[in-house]
Image (cartoon, rainbow, N blue to C red; front, side, top):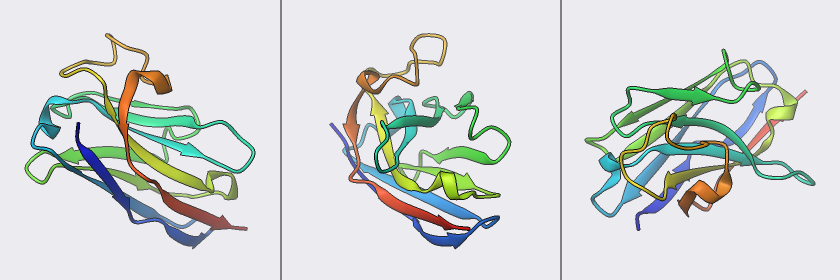
Length: 130
């Protein structure tokens, strides 16, 4: 399986923006749907966004819709999460994840389910101050 490494987190004031990146190794990145999850202290890991292998289809949690944009560059084996209008309740460790099966679409799986993914990065911390 691929190794995933997130970056781009940091401390930002409410209303600010961050762009997260996740770089994959292993040579088969372009075959897989990718997703972002986040986990705040005392809470379960929750789905944020997903993008299909060719980037044609995207999916967002209600909390991210209209503020976050997921994208990917398969030539660089990288998936991005552009976050705007950040709020304190966006503070969490953000993780990228790879689908356990190749070439799936949002119609073929529940992208919000943790068990649909079998490769995870170590996470990058996002802290939004009020």
